[in-house]
Length: 207
Picture 1: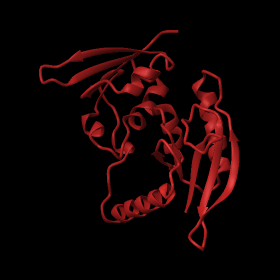
Picture 2: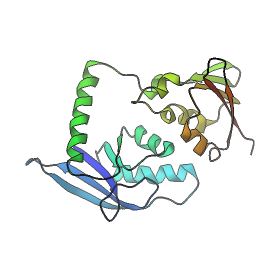
Picture 3: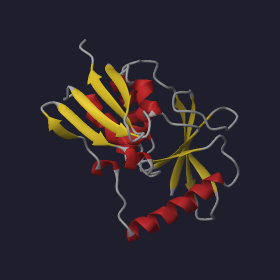
Picture 4: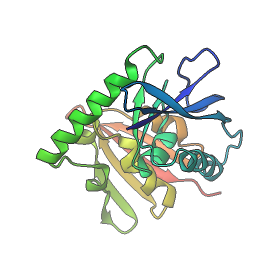
């Protein structure tokens, strides 16, 4: 199994929006971890989401058949690109001794569980049209499911902008949505319901 790690010059993990080295590891026959590749990683300075996605996809292609990456943290828009490439994203503050081995064990256990039960994925959740151009989705279940990120559910829909209003039921406004709605040229309006949940209304801004 191969695992990629994004690290700085000291070997500590860094975020996907930092510059550093993208190192590809593989477990050898003698059970040690060897470096297959060491790529210079430069995060694109462009504000354009499409340019960022293109750059990340180029790095993914350079990692061949790897589908696991270790980083310090991962914002929603970057998570989406890796998820679309069937990557599992692991986060840690440091590339500590035996961490790759721990990830390998957890990945193998996860594969065994998937063979027994089919878990829901982001593709199982999609906004429904309440009335013309007004869509609705309840992501409270998604927010309580550690295996699904709400950004994986919503960003593909938001990027298309084929709506006038997206009404979201949630426990709180997702942090990633607060961070990127201006970049996506979207407006947010929040309302608390009598049940204590929150409604977020998302509308595209007219440019």
